[in-house]
Image 1 (cartoon, rainbow, N blue to C red):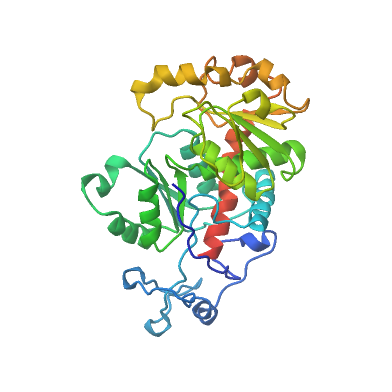
Image 2 (image 1 turned 135 degrees about the horizontal axis):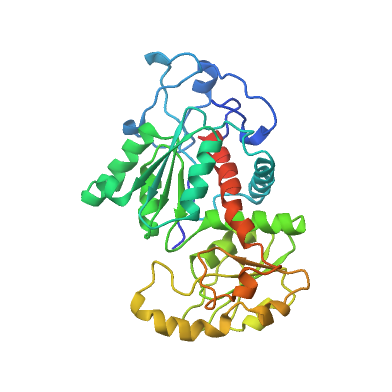
Length: 365
């Protein structure tokens, strides 16, 4: 499913703890209580939610009762469609800056980010934990058995409580509906770290990797071969915003639905022809039924990313994979570890892209 786009809120000029996202190289200025109060009115049509009432803060004091006000509704990052094309372009540029100077921003100084993991994770957990720390913040990692959601507490109540302690909430889970409900009730930005339907943070890292390889994303061609899953969907949505031509080749029964102008085919050779990047993912994801493993492997075998398929792409083409990989299944070892891959750059770029995203969302909160 595609989650609804949340209301956007304007960035404030001064925010606590470091550099603002919109002016990444300038020094932030202390915000007065009056300025904060003026910028904190609800947007037109906004709904007052008394359970999420906060005190306006300055660097040196807590505002008195008379200066309390409701914050604007937060921005969320659920599918990637919440960004405009220009915002995405600036985000990728900022990510490149943060990669070259990892400790240059303290946008989360003195603040915490809640990271909920209801699915196993290597790259997502590493990149978010390290990224939050590099921004001066504290990552609060919460596993399924460490929150009361597993014992029947409502998503709504969980959102209310987390919003009182964290500057943002990231969640890696299965149902897209759970993330949408969390965002509906949260008073801080919610980030989709992975669902069955979408993986937008991965797509940001993919675009950053393409930008590094070719200098720009717009006008380039990416061919995705394999299961038309959440990764393919996010590439179509976020890649389309960046001006990337996304082609998705999948067998019948595993094809992506028409989305964001992606070119869909059942011929991997056709998809890969003259592509600048060739991308694949595992054939059996954590949300798939293990009983279907044999049939999935049989159907997807012609879509393996091997040396012969890569040769059909442009001479300068790179190979991409979001990992974990199963060498010999969806990708050969020769491609996975070969000279044309940028897969390990992708894995690192998760951290830098997500740091730029956190700066943007926190600045808008």
